[in-house]
Length: 192
Image (tube, rainbow, N blue to C red; front, side, top):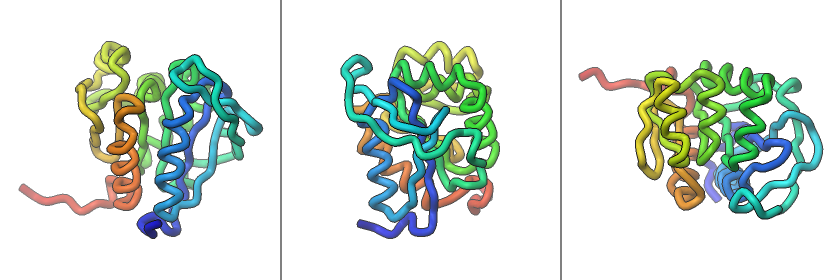
């Protein structure tokens, strides 16, 4: 266990149904093992069931706080798992979309995997950004003004994206690294 994220709080989003279990549990465990406090955020509190491979029921987890109960200032980083139904459900929820939009504006690390970038498209934050995702979102990202690339993990000024569960090791490493470094606007930049 490292202490890279001691004193930091990370929010991780769970949809009311359909979030991919590994894309929730692995980043959650990675930031917790690095010392962060983790809060599970959703559209409403209570138990929600995750899925495996979009179709198979998986374990249930507790959503501790709803979007209406939290503020972007409460978190040093935000993680949004994929899952086709979960991501689609979140992008159809006004509170979720507003929270994601407002969190993005803080320039704190926003970490999204697989179908999760649908929420970024809906929150209107991919214009001019380099993003990866599950391959079927390529057109959506491009239509929203983003540059879609087929890479394991992409970091663009604190926005961390990955393609699918096969990329979880690289994604989790970057999530911890970016949250440790803090908001992009607080970082020193090299003048070229």
